[in-house]
Image (cartoon, rainbow, N blue to C red; front, side, top):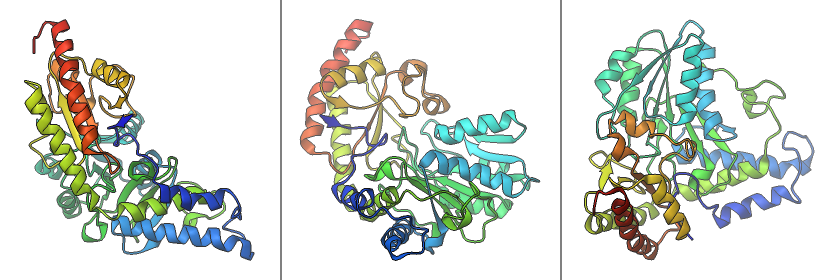
Length: 382
């Protein structure tokens, strides 16, 4: 199998699994208990918090709160900001956010919250002037992703956060779920207040994520109960999962492997351009993640390409894994005003640390025939 869908999830790294196993077997103590048997689980949580803080550049480990993943972190960021100051009833976000933000904003809007959605240009980039105009004293939170999960386009969140702070008292949230482990993150050097990550996107386990909350931010708890997570998210901690995200964060903090991944991505891009006429790279004129290419093959249906590659043992997608199977144009490409025929022919290739040049070459051998055959069926030629 060739796995080129690393923006959907990643292979759990060996050291991550090894870090988790003790807390699924002999080290089963409740970290909140007072006896010595709970000391090692408690220390594992503290170490994981330190590792995640280092991954995102937080100044203090107490700014890191563990969650069940990116969706919970994103939802908590929005709801926590709104609940902290009921006088503020506006959210500013973008038209190309992940479903965890986009669908929540749709729901809140139906319940009376005002939502301003920033558009993007043909390369998938936001307009900072539009952001400046959208923010007001009624804005509770601004949510902008660091890197788009479908196109890989990287947004200027440092500059965006500065604009928000200049014009309002709103909290600034960054969805960094698909950026963590691929590009540097340093919240301490920005005005970012909230930042979401998810372990399974950087070779950690599924079902565990984290939310960075800048110290001193007016922000409401996620759940009330026994006082875990410094009183912000009650419930007995899943120590094995937290140990996993800690180990994954330690591995992901070393970005040196991303240089090799970028070379593989460029090898793939160049090969597709050379072997397949008229392919279109969506977002290519913007700064992109080193691992991601969103490519359209006009005249060939993207979902059929995915199916044919699957038959050949290759895993890719047509967009967000949280949107697969809905049989509609990607909202991201739609916001970029990509024509319907081109948008429905798009494929997302997202490479990872465990991919090889040989795998890229194998995909480049498969793709021309698949696209040519489908173009022949559709009558669009080569």
